[in-house]
Image 1 (cartoon, helix red, strand yellow):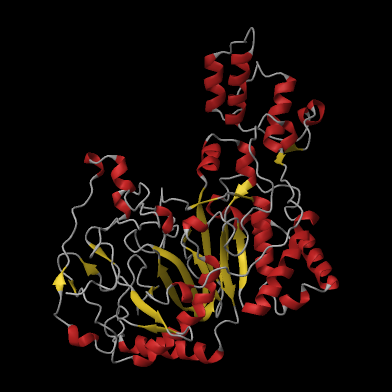
Image 2 (tube, helix red, strand yellow; image 1 turned 180 degrees about the vertical axis):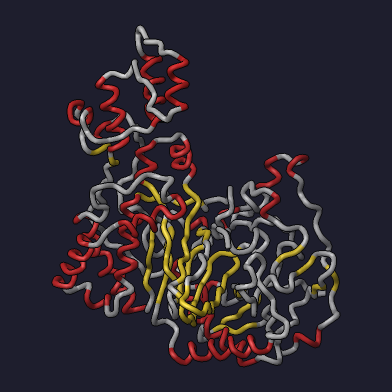
Length: 550
């Protein structure tokens, strides 16, 4: 029997198999980063609130018609600056804090988008040039991670064919609807890699690469079941066991029972894509025209993946496209006791008489702190304390002097100073890789899929990047699709030590997905699709295509 053309982890390779480097060492860095805990190089640099605000602003500006032309006109740039100055930043700050609104730091009194921050509109000129060449817009791009969007990449003919394909499948399945799990019967799966899973010890696998699309039905019943692998149990395994192909990723992020079914794609000499295997839940002979439509959709997704997809061992070598550094100077240390980090400056007389009301709990904390630091602390009557607490009166604070009271008010009132960005530097957005060239010989795997914060699939699938296309909507607001990366360990540890100033200054972001806009992003982003709000009818249709890693 000839050796199989392709080797699949969990089938003819160990599930947690690691590829070998050119020096024949097992090398996890040959995988693309995936945002599961402990996956190597999947952590993202935490960004300042101001940088997130700048990215949201630039993302909104690139939604304007003809933005790529108007950004070069100084008069229009001045108009945009004036609009940014005049608009309330309440909504902007709410988007930045997301689910922490009301729990996290309050919005600063000074404006987040300062003149120095707005000056980064120059960045859009470089993106405009890239957009003119490619039709793609890098957006919400932090150091080492980016989202690619385009409202013009799907032409009218393809858009029409996607709608036709949706309607055809919707009518075909209306008597046997597959609702996506935990969607409250609001998300229908027409095509999804989890609908008919590959199940260990049950699903048949043909080792020879002979099953295509048009001939797929002829192989029904052939092949042999793939033996399941013994699950790893954390309780009786050394932690090093979990490093094998997983960067210490624990068993709960793997499945020893099943995995999704991807579809194989080959590239022709002209670079066009063709499915060489069955797409999960898409009949191979009944809907050949839908296969052709999806191949054209893959053709459109590839250039966006060229930009946002990268392997671990290429993250730091400067060969990938887009921004690799923050727009801000990295903060190596910060201490709340450093008064220069806060505004306004502390003044005892000013804040002693300032109209800042401390809560009963804050007064108690202040009294306790002063009691323990006093040389001769004043004891208070316990019965009086209980009476005042019962009647809802503020607690007595015999050990709190004027200076301590003023400082307590100042700490509650003060705002963190948000540093301005570094001087603008040009960024090269042109991709340095071509997935068509890279996978021309071996092919690419694609999955099509439709909550809570999640990453697509599990570690079995090793999904590397996603392309999302809302091709139709009716009577709904734009879908909010927040995205976040795992924080770099060092910054996460700093924040866990409760440095209040850092908690004010650093945050994550989100994007709005609009009809007929393609959005592509790296699998280090986890995401959540918030419920859509509508007037009368709730209807939104999307295609989510993802590319497995490795």
